[in-house]
Image (cartoon, rainbow, N blue to C red; front, top):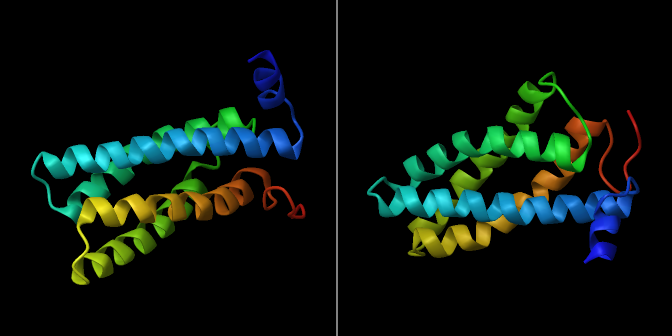
Length: 139
């Protein structure tokens, strides 16, 4: 356990990737749980997705900026929110297409959420650090 904690606390790209993946799992689970909660509470799929998105952006910004990329302040929040808005839009259209194909919203989002998280890793890393994570060049 100490090795794991030491590995996650490092500053190298491997430690950053490990933290992003760990936080990404938490963020994905939280987003899916909020979506499911709102859906089961009676909201439509798009409303549930929108509300889960809005609530998730603030949590995700803090978690990514502080815990993954070591950034502080709110200066990058507008760009971060714009990236998340683009990811939400793509997710929303994919969810709509899945529902039109007869796939239940909970099942569709279980597949779509990890894909959205993968896109977020690259795009959010670029917004918060000026480079694509792992292999990107600095602006």
